Amino acid sequence: MVAPDGTGDINNYTVIYVTNNPFLAEYFQTAGLPVVFDPQLTYEYTPTEAGGALGELYVTASGQGLPAYFLFGTENDPPPNSQQKP
Image (cartoon, rainbow, N blue to C red; front, side):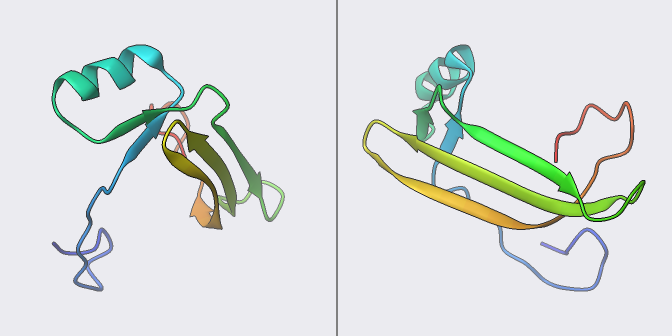
């Protein structure tokens, strides 16, 4: 797979999918995907500059059979009205 900006070669694998949407979790389970329902799933996007598109993303997730974990890193804010989430 080629990186979105065309500068690298990457491999993406989903080890497990965590969601706070019970209907999505049930659908994925029915489809045989590895999914954990976490009603306390939390994420926060904080811009690093006023009006800028670059910021920090923080995520906490856990669930039945899944040890709690924390992710953080630099992320681009999606374009307005794009239906994308950071």
